[in-house]
Image (cartoon, rainbow, N blue to C red; front, side, top):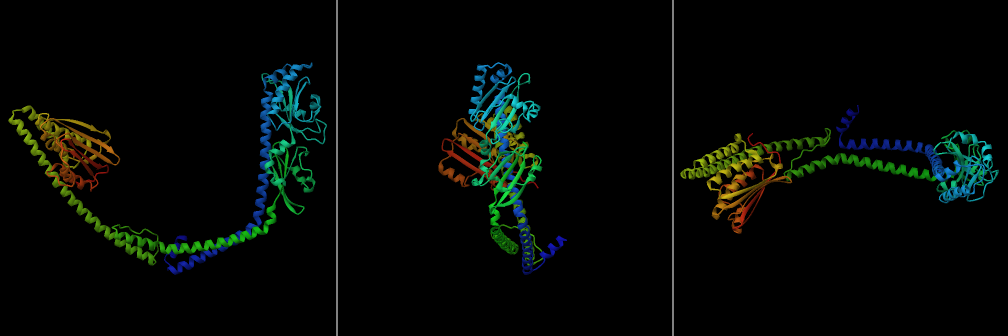
Length: 586
């Protein structure tokens, strides 16, 4: 159904399309705006309150857990101290001053390095007490610990810790609050109880653990233990009228409520954490008093949204009309530069669609004409290449027979045999079943056969060095590229000097090209002759024919460079592009 509607829309006139698009966008915009406006007032405050309350409680709980975790780790270090272990394990009913001083020294070092611990008390199994207290010394004994309500849980923990509010029950000080971490100390070797440890965490250390949460001193934090006794609280907490429903919370559960106190709105949040403590957070929520401002901002945002959406719709509609026209214009301008590209855009059966179809039909016909011309040019180029190739073969054959004739007149039959065999191998490779393309390796072997002929003919007039990169051996190139260059080095370079010379042949991979080098230390040429040669004024078939063949075969992509000095030799470098070779035999 949607596809049919889209197709019908494409067939509409341009003016009708603009009207339809604008009406659809306006209806959608107003509908969305109305829906958002209705929902935002009902949900934004609830979501904000819930999110802020939960984040505050979770942050406080995380900070408390970190504090307890740190104290727990520090207590493990203390109870595993070898000196304390030895004193507790060897305890007796008699007071031992040396043991007392030894343990107290360990405790002093421990408590000085832990600012969040106010005191540490350790008892051995005989009631001997070892302690360090930064504040007021607490008068109590191991028997007071054993008579407490939570002692059974301490024993059941088997070395694990329990945390209790101990001011009233242990120290008999109802108005003072001490959060104590207690654990049985076991012998590290036998795991039998050898003592009891009590570490007291002061109220200010707990407050400092979530100090950053108190915004400008207005936030109120309260902690209640499992019996709902205050661990910490503010003096003026009664005015906030806490909800007794927090006593029904289970571990991990939380809820919040919003109450007004002295004209201000407050979020009161409750969370029961893993220690069975209840965390109460009372935070002023000033954003509630700015509700009217929020509505104004929302209304303004809606107007802006509608305006932007409407503008976007008009721009889109205009673009859908002008974009294909611009593409048509761009393609038509490309024709001036010789670029023929069809316009590929989705259109219907409107005016633009008809214009696109007519233009693409014209481009297709032009491309067909160009393709026919290219084919004709390829045939012509192939014919030119065949003519040049046919000139090279008789030229080389003539020179070879000249060499064989000279050897035969000198009665050098063995060398005549060798040169004829090399000549046969040379033509076997060069003919290559009529194909014009061979591998670099085959081209090098053709040159070797040619050099065998020439070294016999001229009685080792020259030496040859080769450096062929194995990476280029399997690349295919036009055949008989190196041989004419080597022939020039012999006839026009070394032979005129009348003395023995050297020829170097190299093949390398240079980025996207195969680099072929033929160099000799022959007679060379002067600057004027070199300049004439590089401009195409070279006589003879060898170098000129090679350059012309490469230009035809590789569509002008091949390059060459000639470097020569009089009496210092000549170097010819040819660069052949590494690419898929076109089959010219088709």
